[in-house]
Image 1 (cartoon, protein in one colour):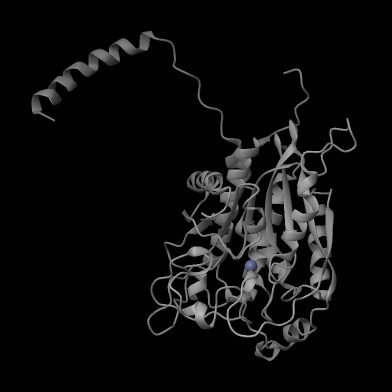
Image 2 (cartoon, rainbow, N blue to C red):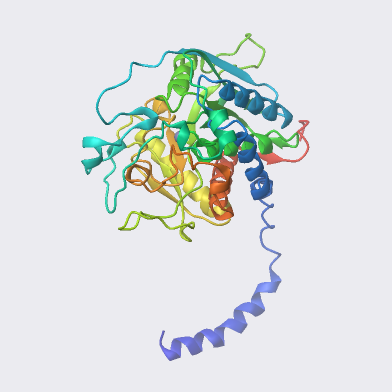
Length: 414
Ligand SMILES: [Zn+2]
């Protein structure tokens, strides 16, 4: 700016200020954002306690007693939070005959043999940099904690499976909902603390906050904990198969009740805590969380609903900027190996993770993935805090999308 212009500004300014007070006070202050208060009801201690609660059932492998006990515990917790309308999905699971050769898909996809050599990873992600092989531990003897080893040893038995959901019913649009989900089964002979105790705890913590009697939402929210993710998304697929056609149907007629509200979006949470960066050239990993760790929001660019899913991902990124305390969020187009996949051609579907699934987890960035070291004590508060930030992100976004408010329930006549 030219000096004369600057001088002119100084000279003119007092005149303008002198004229202002004659006008009445401008617009009233914006009312405080109720979502800030809702997000503040999440905290690190509660999130950690919920993860810890889940780890008491070991790796929660599908088709075992420890998996069924975990499900009973989760359902009891949801009810205790006030999410009392729990329902279970039942389906039959018969494992496929063992495959020969390397590679694979579903919950265990994209590792080994030829797949590990390919530059294009699972979900279409381009894999760069130092790559460590990924594997699933199938040997109980690799678990050094004898008590945990004994808990995790009984094998999976084919047959009936169950999973659970509960629903926050919307006050003005109970016939529409967002699905907020994680998977409660695990593998690897650890405690499945991160995969996916961290995502299951996130969903449970959100159910706790939204179920508080002073919280209302215009639209409904379903909190779903899938089983059999690790065998190929079988639990989420069973839900789609059984319930897709029931969407938006009032039952009984005239009751105002919608057992399956119309799906507006599906948000999966799977592995929320560990972002220590790329493996070093010697294969070792940083023992601490990257200071610049982020929440990775992914959608699948080849899905029928890719454009809408991308827009949903942006809403989550903006909610992260507004509500998450420590870590930012980034968006990637290669969502894969996750329970949102069975939904991705039907509704906008995204997943939140600690890392991108294809390019990063698929390159060995999480050395605890499906390993005996996936136990509660492996993770520091900086790791748990990334999970908490993902919870803040989803809570903020879902509260915005469903019109969440706090205070006494509206009595009408306003
Ligand atoms: Zn998982």
